[in-house]
Length: 297
Image 1 (spheres, one colour):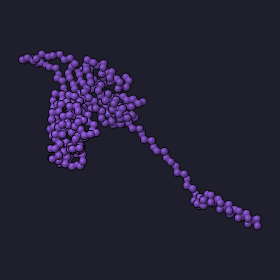
Image 2 (cartoon, rainbow, N blue to C red):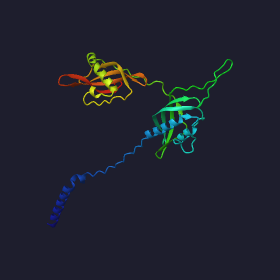
Image 3 (spheres, rainbow, N blue to C red):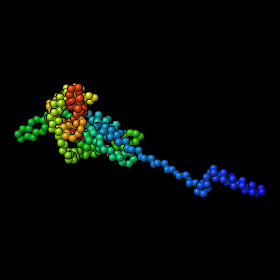
Image 4 (cartoon, rainbow, N blue to C red):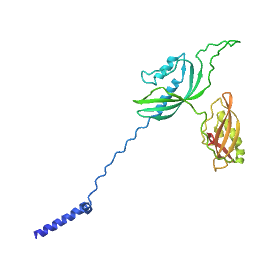
């Protein structure tokens, strides 16, 4: 009798344990916890902006010289070179050259914090700092004249730089490289059909807008809500050279305009894309300028 009661007790204990832990856990062993691998840390990106700034500062000092102010160039270069480097960087100390503009470009990273930075520099060269006038040549004698000043031109500079401790320095002499004489060939663009009727109807609207654009007040000729700041003083509207509205489109319409501006003693021709929107009042509807952009897109 005791053994029977003991067996029943054990049976109910097993049933209770199964209810708590689950029979499946007895039959199928639990899976081992999956090991997680920490994601690999990506290498920090090369600081292109800082490299471009350092290379541009160096390029301006390197390609600008004046034989009467040698120390000035040396001091400017020293700030971009390692301590103790030759601050003449190969210059023989003669001539004059002016740097008009500097445009940093592509950065090609290398190993150990090094990189090569392309910089385009607009320069204008001249002869000696104070050339003495030469006598005019006479019969039987040779005469010399001062070297004429060369026109402005672009030249490329490949500047090797090195980064250490958050600072950049130029590691060695740069290389002069050529700049393409022209840009890349443009792809063919599909012809845009013109809405001839609407073009004629809105031509005077466009003329009034550009006249006001140069005159300092665009609010009266712009669509409500448009924010089109006028051009600065010294620019004069010479005329609307061409105007056409695209045939496609519903609601607001886009058109192309060529405009002549007088500035700096000459006239220049520029291109605009103009957005027109229809404005309704109590007694009429009219087209007004809502936006302008450069080019043909």
